[in-house]
Length: 213
Image 1 (spheres, rainbow, N blue to C red):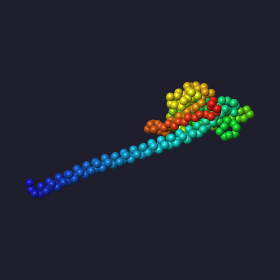
Image 2 (image 1 turned 30 degrees about the horizontal axis):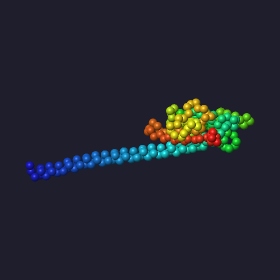
Image 3 (image 1 turned 90 degrees about the horizontal axis):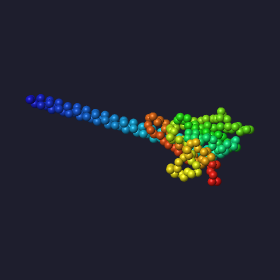
Image 4 (image 1 turned 135 degrees about the vertical axis):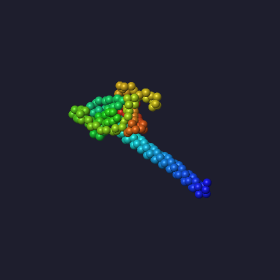
């Protein structure tokens, strides 16, 4: 082998090693780039999940606070009917003078599919009549995920001790025995995409239903 051939072989080996190094470097860069992209995607996903969860909690509190206030101050209807008209697991109807005009409005919270609605009837006078045809209905949320085994409303009598072991009243409840009402809202704005539901609860003791005053 001549000196020229030896030098040529050495040069070819150097070029071969350099090419291999370039392929390895490119492979490493590709792996790192993919990892970075995946990390960024995950961060974006988790940020959206976190933001969605915060928004759902905020919506839940926005709904339950006025509900609790209205339930807490319920009172007998202007026609003399009892304070609670219906007490179901997905509907609650009661009376309250919301605008302080001396007449008690009929307030109805009810679930239709994944929608929680609020109905309001202002009574007519002379005589007092609650005309269901005049009910004004508004939507509180479209993301309600309560099932039949996860009631929106639960009712407790005076035997309620305040701990989780206390059982709620069975349906149909005796409305005159109700002393505490528990509201549970399970909210999820995208249940198919990811199980990220939040649960907001509130326990309300209607003042005018207390029997220890």
